[in-house]
Length: 252
Ligand SMILES: Nc1ncnc2c1ncn2[C@@H]1O[C@H](COP(=O)(O)OP(=O)(O)O)[C@@H](O)[C@H]1O
Ligand SMILES: [Mg+2]
Image 1 (cartoon, rainbow, N blue to C red):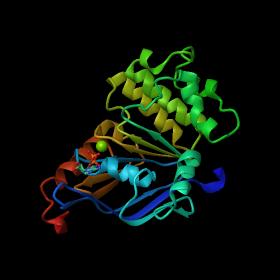
Image 2: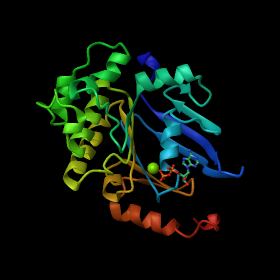
Image 3: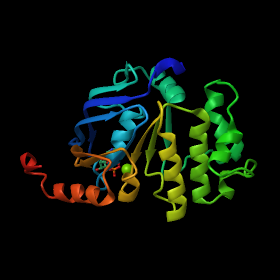
């Protein structure tokens, strides 16, 4: 139930994940990741394309199972949780914002926003407040196909707001948006992270990453640096410093 996460927080240790390639070889996508997210914190994860950001987020959110490592959400270890337990965790405690919005095309805006809370059989969700918070009042009856990308992403965030999960994961949520729409989405995520609500944001946009309290720099499936309240310039420097230094890990 929703009492799962008193003071939502996430802690992961030595998370590893590999995928099988055609021909039987395996590629190590996550090579022993440690990451902590404190209650109220917004943590950004940056790294080049293919560095394992999405895979990490999926493992942390219980959408994908890690091969090894410990993942704790609240007080519960989830890395060996049953499928049923994970499904409940995702339903009750986790919100996920995808780059591709993932709204249900056949449902209107209001129905999309209400859906997770209805699935959780929770009290009637306050969809009006959630839509007002993202500036989408008046669009309740529209189908996602009638909205711009920026509007669809705001609806996807309203869906998370209405369900009020303690942990929100966002995977490149501004990747398909223009600058103004992206700013708005980032503002909403930034505001969400407070009290016992935390946000984990994957992005390759350094200005977006700089809005976080902490930034984890990933490279080739490993954490190469963790920065605190870093500027975009500092994050850029951290990603560049580590570029090309992969064979010589001792120097990083
Ligand atoms: N299901 C999969 N099967 C095989 N390889 C995968 C799978 N998912 C991701 N990968 C590989 O893992 C690496 C990291 O992918 P991903 O986590 O999507 O990185 P990022 O989000 O940082 O771009 C890439 O090389 C990608 O091709
Ligand atoms: Mg990705």
